[in-house]
Length: 318
Image (cartoon, rainbow, N blue to C red; front, side, top):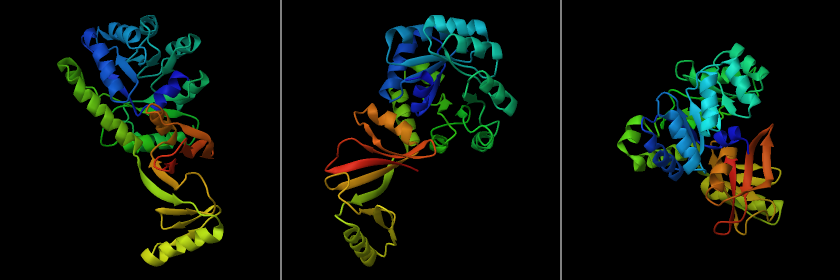
């Protein structure tokens, strides 16, 4: 898996400011406990490189990189310390080219069409959008995604626990960056349990899991229509006939065949199906990619392998 893909599979890339390198490993472990396995340690402090080195050596399951990388010399220091990716607040062609030539994942800051075009010319299609709240947030990125449809953004600045779901659902957002899950004050105070809890809340909000509908298997189209009409008769649900199923309202799907699941299926909506797959894999649930459905290049639905309580489970893009 490419490091850029792994960043995108996480709900948030924590922007970590560490003043004492001894706090680096406990912070990394707190993030992992909260369901996040990437961290961007900034070079805003003199402890940054030592912190990256400590995490790289002692917490191999954490993908650690550097933020606030301002020049080529710093980038070389990050690589030497074991950092796997670079995040820069702006676009420096020399820095980006060196990273690309040395197989170091780089996410430069770009907020204008000209900067994005320069990044694309060097082979970079995942960029940092910073500060997102100053440069127009979601509406600005949506506008930029029209001419640059293959570009994904990592907005940082103004993203928090309250609005992360809105950002996570945007198709042009790769992931988000933020420090609210591990503030400098909490790290310095050793509030690692709080950091873990904030990460769990961020992941939960970003995933946005909710019940979409329940699927009922029947043996034929006639049986499916009859069952759906009974729900309509009883509860006033609108009946809508489709190719493979009949819906009664939006919450009941009656299949025209004995489809997946002993008892039927349960559909769960999420803000991002691909990110949800990565999240669920960490918990031991795996997608059956043969069932995946796409709209263009974007996955919009997929079943999980196995059953829960006799029901097949499928993820559905909001």
